[in-house]
Image 1 (cartoon, rainbow, N blue to C red):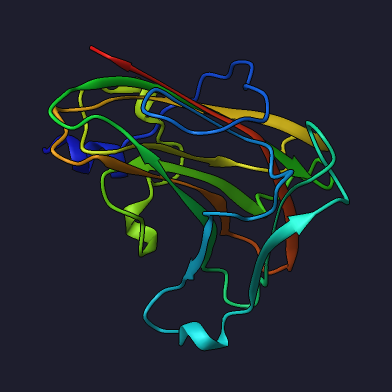
Image 2 (cartoon, rainbow, N blue to C red):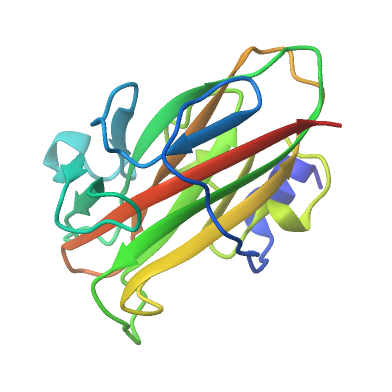
Length: 210
């Protein structure tokens, strides 16, 4: 089985750490606290082929309602009518091509409360191409920390495990990259038939040549 298939089908538990502060991106580091708005963030959504994307309601914007660091965060809302759909924001990160890297990404996700039902999953992804469909994200329980070199890094793990903020993180061992840009995506995947709002903040990506 290819490692890409492993990343999308195997189950693993993520490892958490302390995220960085609000900052800027360069070839070796990226931090984001959303104090300056969406800026270079691209917002997207996808849903299965049985539903027209135009019928899937979702929103991604900046909010002052909740924050893990500073005064603002990324608000992600999506409807639950279809038990399906992923909503996310994505940001480019510059890297030096022709090198392989060891990368660690962390982020804070906010849930309204603890729930025995899995209402949403947190999704994070970092790769040489932007995510376009749900299959571009890892499957449930998968965290690239548990693997060696893979085509992209990321995680998909349950939200609503506690009320308030909870940290999620993954590591990615890259192959030698031919690109000068990686795309960092964070968002939520619909599981339960309920509308839900989550907030994302205090993102950090550490990039080290290997």
